[in-house]
Image 1 (tube, rainbow, N blue to C red):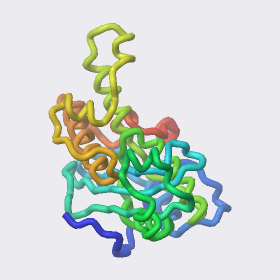
Image 2 (cartoon, helix red, strand yellow):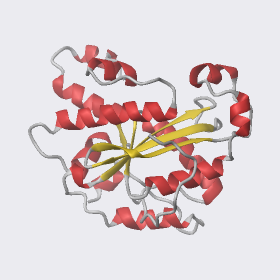
Image 3 (tube, rainbow, N blue to C red):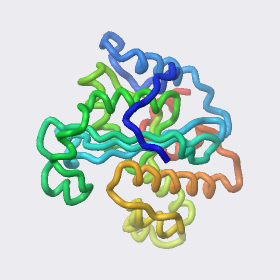
Length: 252
């Protein structure tokens, strides 16, 4: 497996669903292309005909309005299989010091962060890597809120890719399997590692953006396989179950 901060521009054709942005707002060309791509995408094909990018971030904290990205890790799924030859990892230099409590969690020291390239380079690499793939993550709303906040500042727009939350998928799966009281269902843990351990999945190092993305990829594949045992899901079915942005499907 090779992790690198250098990525080839492959003329990737977009990556977005029309999840509303002011069209008068200047945007990176790839962001504009992506909006067109996903607006016209056929959602009715089986899942193995689409590409997915599973991503995770490590931040200076958990405040989506002010905390910054320290690392981004991602990998690609093709035909619902992990492609280990296509991976992304980038350590970025935040504008403020990394708090001690965050260092304890993800282990990235101030000196490492200070030596890292600026976030703009990481975001450019992420745009190229995501391409026309559907994004997947565990509690992905947190990651995308910060990523899109920074994309707006750096490139004048947001990623429009549909985003699948494995936490939501786990809830839907558990709801379908649950036979006990609703109150018990509400108390069930949706922690990534606990879910992975329960389902007998390989366990990787926690609080590392790339290995957490890898952990999420295994969970995603497992949940999709379990949830479509009796029927072949389309992309539209998947997004109805786990998409953090639902408006697109209500209008189609």
